[in-house]
Image (cartoon, rainbow, N blue to C red):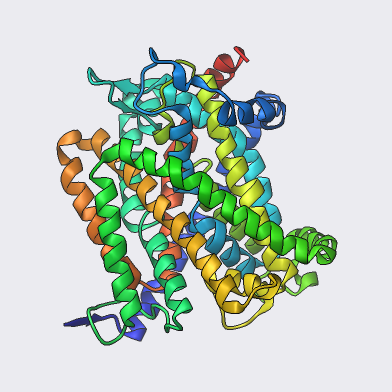
Amino acid sequence: MVIVCGDSMCEMLNYWLKTVDDYIWGIPLMGLILSGGLMLTVRLKVIQIRKLPFALRLVFGKNNEDDVDAEGEVTSFAALCTALAATIGTGNIVGVATAISAGGPGALFWMEIAAFIGMATKYAEGLLAVKYRVMDENKHAIGGPFYYIEKGMGPGYKWLARMFAFFGICAGLFGIGTFSQVNSITAAIGNSFESEGTGNIMISVVGKYPPVTVITSVVLTLIVALVLVGGIKRIAKVSEMVVPFMALAYITATMALLFCNAGKIPESVALIVKGAFAPKAVGAGAAGTMYVVMQKGVARGIFSNESGLGSAPIAAAAAKTKEPVQQGLISMTGTFIDTIIICTMTGLSIVVTGAWKVEGIQGVEITTYAFNRGLPLSCLASSFLITICLIFFAFTTILGWNYYSERCLEYLTGRKNVVWFRWVYVFVVFVAPYISVTTVWMIADIFNGLMAVPNMIAIFVLTKVVAQESEKL
């Protein structure tokens, strides 16, 4: 049986999604997120620079994991790894490529600006998550924007907290948590086997899709199901093992690529800065107005590091710690690692190799082209390398966003519905490969933006609380 969406219907749906996406990610939302981060940066005296060395020592040195009396379910490092598992994903490989392809090299500049400002936002989110979290008699922790909205802003704003939780569930099920990650995995593996990609929106068991796509979706679904059965502790354990390994492997590969093309880096950096303010001058294409460049850079930057979305504080709330400020600092390093380091290296790789200018390729194909062109390896070897990195990145993001979605659902309905929700999530993972790439990223962008609105309203209102707590530093 085959259910097909006709070309005209698909075009109409994509047009409608693009209209909604452009409206949500317009000047008001970008202004809300950037102004909130800028306000915190000033109020906290540029904490992302002043306290970054200390924050990194907390992450990689001896932190509060030995504090046996602290409330929570996992160590602060495990909570960070869970958050990084959700943030270090396709945004670092596919999202950067999509942004530069749509807006030119200048989009990377605005990704960096959004990340630098977003570090202050991520600090505030982590701090508020621990300060306002709720613990039951079994030390089960639940927290995040829904609780710092309800408890920090007051019960009268519970409707806003529920709005965030609802959008969080949608983002996990239909956006950043499943569709974009699974689609990228199957596309990367399909490209390695010379597949034709995912095509238009449709669900098909045989015929349209090559066997490798169907096999990948089945295997991935089974592995995800096995991990999710164990809940947050198993997700955190897997994240602690996989996240440091995958990040180190990818950083090593991109450093090798940049070393092999070191002579082109100064020119590429100049191209990125020029493209941020004068995109036409670097041949960014018809869509390359400064507004489009900024929009794509900021949107993809937030998609990657999730600063302002309110997702990462859901994981931070589970940390075994008594100090909200300390967890805020640890959370802040997530944006630094995700965007300032990993996305920058991906973007530079794409620019120095000229992959962003190649016509007829999109998404992961752009980054794969950069690795094929920039590394002294065979195309088969470099394609395999990027495919493995993407699989690990996307897989851990699927796990992390399941946890976020479950906590949102738990806030709305209680724990009784969590078990069946996991199976719905697993089913969505199974069908996700059969959605078109363009549609996937627009859906993810839309739900990300809808999540950010109630969260950023709370950040603005609770800035004074963040500043008061930060006086302990």
